Image (cartoon, rainbow, N blue to C red):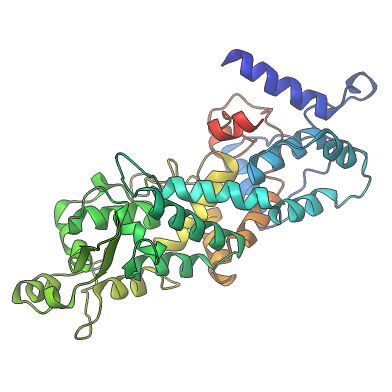
Length: 376
């Protein structure tokens, strides 16, 4: 690991240039204006002032191009790409680079991989989706990323899908849950789309939420490993089902009232994806920040609970508002974060205060992911 770190630092230094002797600026830093460039920076710097912590300088162009390529596309820039960027005198070249990277096929591939990890897209043990279903599910997720499908639509299609797991790939969200018990499904929904861990809530809270997922049926077909996932109308018509649905309640305590014969999953999706929902946009905004910074505003990013508050509540609230206002455009959120001075700061912190990195006074160092490292 030490050898890998040396290689990474050496590459960054090479990209930053070797003119340190001719310039007072550190090769990892630039003399760019560190003044807050937008609301993100105002909120980050405002919190740092409260803590009495000075932020790091803006990173050098060499560090920035390497960082942006790795965080957005999961790949390193080629020598030609790096040289063109470093020799470009356009003051807007960082913004233009960000726009180009977000349109590349490598961005689609890399962020598809991120979603596949989160949604448990795995062919064999312990998920056992099997090859046909994995290929269909992965292809659907990749298409959604490529077309920049609004995040609320992306989630709604998974939560309310019915059909063959080969021909309606979204239903594989339910098949990727190891247990088909309603409570296990409810916990997978909460973890994936609300950032809530199973141990965070008492049993009663899970029980009333799981009622929304109690009418799902899994029916095999004559084709190998194919399965139909659907809202089971026959099961829903029983007295036991009616009794279960009478206990249904959303995580905020609101009773789960449904129309006759309405798929309970649709009712839950309507609640979850409402613009004022206290969990949905917050979790998505926090996760995108985590993917780009290596640390969530709530950290870990899948452990949102009252006793694990965000380090900067105003920052997280702003990102939530931007996500909702943009109609759940995740690329819009990425652009905001990537263009901020907070993202473009050097990793060299001017303080030894441990609160500095936790409050984004500098860009946090982290290991390359295995897939990224093998490509590099």
